[in-house]
Image 1: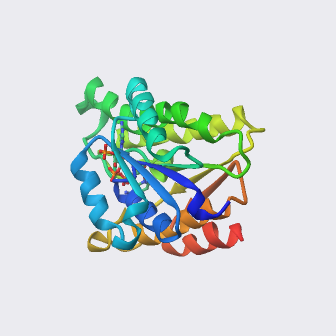
Image 2: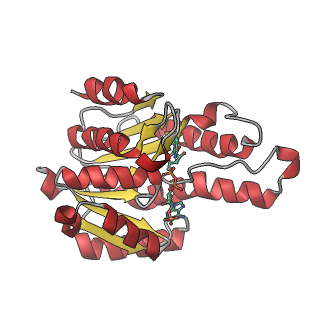
Length: 243
Ligand SMILES: NC(=O)c1ccc[n+]([C@@H]2O[C@H](COP(=O)([O-])OP(=O)(O)OC[C@H]3O[C@@H](n4cnc5c(N)ncnc54)[C@H](OP(=O)(O)O)[C@@H]3O)[C@@H](O)[C@H]2O)c1
């Protein structure tokens, strides 16, 4: 199956990480679909990708964080693209620093869990059945190293939410050891930014996007966790190990 026959659904594709992945996949000739709750973000994404690849980008407004919303947008997506061969799940938020736990409310924690864990779970439940039985298909989760440590004071709920997403991915690997589609996780243990917001040690979302697009293209491994801690790891961890 050539790249042009593959349809990659990038969940969170309008976000910082997701937009880099979308652009890189389009450059490689894939068809790409993106769902966002916000039509303006989708318009911004359309103007961000290269004009000569724009026709291969399908955008839909929808909420993959609710069971009903995910089913609705899945139906609309399949009507437009006919199929989904690959999923990249990059849901969540870039940063959270609401304060130490004693200053927070259950509502705050709920929002964090909804955004990092529930959306990942609900969308997986809706879209995994489309890809799970085909060895040529893939499902790739993007997670954050914040799940393993407190990044700095006041970021505690980010750790709680990110840790839940890490645990969910582990559960999937262990519950579904025989699943034939290529199910992998890229755990990013550093910041990711657009070129105008880079800081030392950060990954440029365009470089990260290229490395993730290469992983999806090669589909040579499954049930693997790739941990990326610095820009050099994009080559040594993601690209070389996947040749
Ligand atoms: N940025 C970093 O520095 C960094 C570092 C390490 C790991 N990560 C990981 O990368 C992932 C993405 O982060 P990001 O920086 O790209 O965040 P982002 O810019 O806030 O993008 C996240 C995307 O998730 C989408 N989303 C969340 N809930 C949704 C829902 N219910 N329905 C539809 N879309 C939903 C948002 O879509 P809408 O358009 O609908 O708002 C948004 O486009 C996260 O898991 C994060 O842990 C990021």
